[in-house]
Length: 164
Image (cartoon, one colour):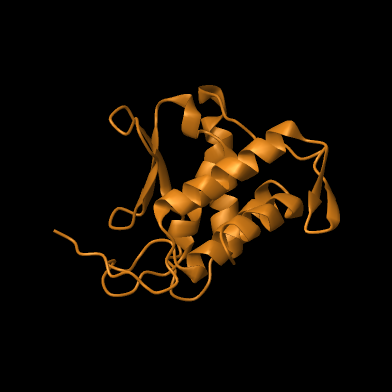
């Protein structure tokens, strides 16, 4: 049994999911948004949703983004992407296997979920993999990946929701 060691800056998963849901809702609506007194134009920003035939594209995108964002202390090889019939409730990064496991159901096949799991792969593990999963370093990586995959406005909205 693995014991998680929570850091002071770790956010609860409910806070992470709430931020993701809020960003997805705003991006799906599009248009312009008043963001702390500034106007963000979201009309051209879309969150890609993948169909089964697009899985090879998703794998290639994950590989490219992993290599472009890999820093010290992070494995050289990109994580594998595996679809699981049993992982129907959530996507997960498994550090021991260095793989991202995605559910077969379509709800998870979008850029936000893929970048969430990729951020886990790109954030160095400490303490033999027992460190908390959503600390400040992870949140910064996640927002940076979303900025690259979706757009800087999406990254900014996510940073705000994740308290980065």
